[in-house]
Length: 53
Image (spheres, rainbow, N blue to C red):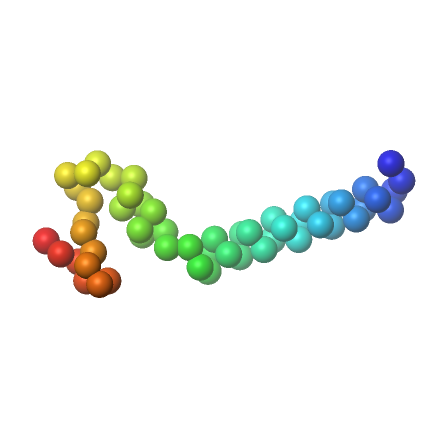
């Protein structure tokens, strides 16, 4: 492959990595993800964004 093609592919891959990292940092609900990883007996139930006990 030509050097310009490799550079273009590296730039696209870097851009996608940066956008993915920003999305996960700003838009992803990590609390909900961690809640899903807990055993069912320990999970919190949210109804209309209000925790229910």
